[in-house]
Image (cartoon, rainbow over all chains, first blue to last red; front, side, top):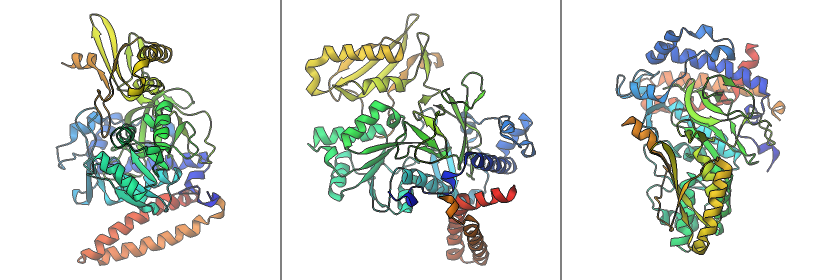
Length: 447
Length: 62
């Protein structure tokens, strides 16, 4: 790669860290004032906390700005200005695009964007794709349902902006998508780790096509933690014979992070466009040092219609100790998004992140990609049931696999599981985000 | 690498384009094909400001 073409933005991506901080502080002041001046929702929230735009002079002052929860956004929607409610900062006629969240954690939240916001979405994605090696010579296949969720819409238009040739794989089924990749010799694609693994399985088992022999060279994954979980990344890369890169974003936030071509075991936060803070999950204290996990509080520094100011994302992250060798000065989060604060739960007194179970399941040879975890209470005791699939070629190693799985789970999560090893294609398949973790204790307490 | 790029010069060109685009948008009050295209161009220019001008303004503010 030519050194001169390494970065999408050679100015911002190599800006000294102290300059990035100055930029973030200045931009935070502006977006906070914008939200305060143009939205009743934000003004009421900030007035109640006694924080006004003139009070923001330092990062310490930013910490006094109240956070916004997804539930607050749910509460205001459906009211005037309909259907978004009073967090809207522009006249309704300036809204050009409606999206909504996927509803993984409850009722979907509506998200309005102006045309400028949409340009900003594409721009944020252009940083991601360029860092992952997308260039005008690429033919990018997008196996995505092009629907009400933002998902890979902005990835599509960012790839166009970069100059790639984009193939929208919209309403095609999985087999037709694989055939189209083969027919057109696509070089890159985007999808959730679950779906990309599912495509590979369909190709191998139902079409007698080896996906690693197709022409895909790079895959951008999003929507789930998978591409940052080493065993899942390995399965994805092995299946497709391609480099797999992670990206994390959200409808209410934007495309805030990405893994670069160095694959440094973490993701860059695009700090010129976003201010990410990590808050201790119990005390709320802001964590600056590497290696301590907390939940991410994030501000999109340039988003206009429905600003994202100190949004409590519930994504669990930690700062990496070392900068990336790619030369980008923005900070890395170690291991990507390691889980959701909603999903990290205490089982038998031990803190459990579902991603730790995935890491184990996908590291055991002979097991399929799918699994399902159900946490329940039997009497007074917590119980975790883990269902996995054994591959046809490993049916005779059932006992060996069960022992290895139980040992690895005990080692990595400090818990014992009730294992159910099923036949291939027993567990549900997902096209977008998978729902593999169920905590029935929560459901029972809500009933 | 960024030292070799004259961001002040780029910034001044962006401002020229922005001024022109804003003038054209004003002239398009009864001309949707002009005004709506200018809205899109101004949104693209805003991305150039985010990418370059905001850094120049940072130096100017100090």
